[in-house]
Length: 251
Image 1 (cartoon, helix red, strand yellow):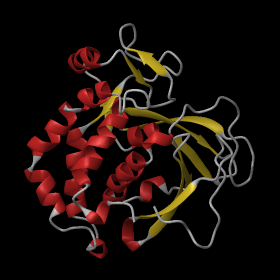
Image 2: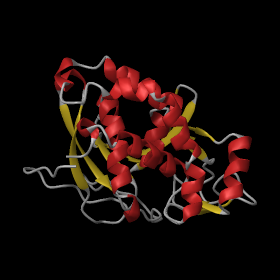
Image 3: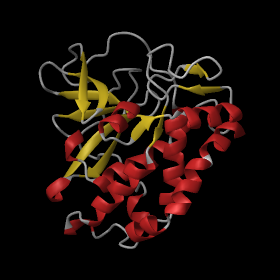
Image 4: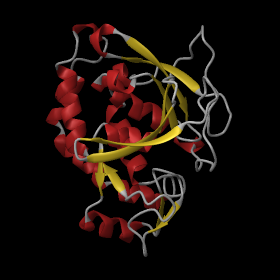
């Protein structure tokens, strides 16, 4: 992500550290600046910015999140305040199609704060783990971290986070494939994206499935198990597959 040279980055409502600002493509040839806290796993959207991101920008966000995965820590408890007006943010529950998600909104319409996990839920990129997938995961690792709040989940006893009650979920490869198809139909101004990338990803569905099947092994390896949940392992798998596409990598 490139730093904004004009406006300073916002202060994270979770940890009070400066957020990282980056520019992402939006629909109709526009671009928007997002403020991200990689430590707390939070994204600040000014009014209606989340619905303006192009499919390519969402896929690029996967890579950005994966590059800074080692910085994640559980979100601190307490009141979250708007980084612009400093008023308390209101916890809000919403639904996109059949998927419920949450965020914190500013009552003065400055914007909204969301976790990486709920942003992915809003975009229909995650789905609950099936019983078969959960059983497979239990064979590889006894514990994963909740993708919603960062708390540890004891897989021997739980299929949802005991702290925030979020169900264990995984990245949906079918939805990733659908987003890539939409990327093919995106605006002409995004010619900087490698034009062969959508074709290569669509033609190599076997590689995509192999990457997702490898995720439990990644958790067991120790590289991801202590800092990650299943969703983050899926993001890492996508980032590996996208590494050959320079147009989607962080500048």
